[in-house]
Length: 423
Image 1 (cartoon, rainbow, N blue to C red):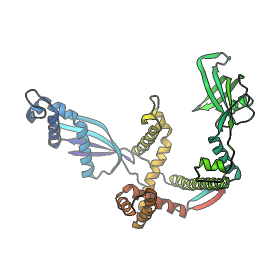
Image 2: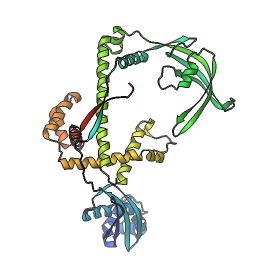
Image 3: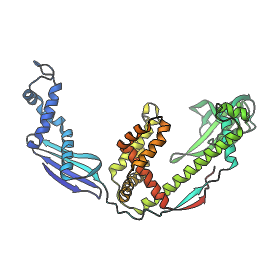
Image 4: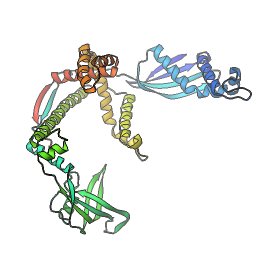
């Protein structure tokens, strides 16, 4: 077997493999035997036809059908014997076979880039600090009331706490109704923060039977979409909020929380924890962004593709039957998310490099501490968890990742700044 490796880029290689008949014999013999087991030839029971007869009748077909597997086998052998050190998934880019003479294939694969570590400790980063306000707590309490509200019939809107049901008839630019563009039973909750202002303004004093025209432009993907529609109000319902008292709190929490004051404290703790966690994520993201800027190297396409494949798989999980819609543009999705996927792949490589440089490994005490925390939550014996953790590469990688994050954050120069994000 003759192997020739060609450098395409810093991280991409092509290996040409040429194999003569004696290199192929073992592979084809196996393919003949596998085919023999499932072939039916007149005069013989299924799988019992003589191997020589199978070769005579179907040998060329069998050989050609097994060429993909042959290429994979030869590639794996070339990797092992020539210490090629590929990463990601290889791609078969060329293949030809002359029976009785030779088999040739070309496989493209990626390798790890050479990364020269620069300063990764002492990164300067800002940490947003958010002060939880009474308005935020009140907002959360009102949201709880709205979740448990009731709808009461009404004739007129006089506040935002109304649901207005309309018939929408889309119009052309001259105001003529468009055929097939009429929707009945469309509901607008006027207190919905996501409801566009033109609809809120048109319906803020609505009465049953009222008609009004709404025209505006709003962004839709990468372009502006014109809205030109006539609204006919068919029903108005007032959102009746329950009284915010101890009885209400006890009822909606099934007695887990018994007073309004206790609920305020609970919400305050939850909101505070949300902003704390968000702030910590921003610190870590800031450190990672700076590290990616400091380290320039080419990211293998195969790793970027793997990240994009994972993102597409996550998208599938959000749809019924875990299948993307027929009109879903996967290629456009991949292009739109390529920059993000490239950054993720780059960080994965850089992360491994720093871990190796620091010699970070999960210690037995780390596994013990994790088992103690998880045993109570999972209701599983601690010793069983420890035994599992010691054999789980995923758990070990998680612990090492935690160590890396702690190292980067603890060494960073963190400047606290007031968070300007609206509550």
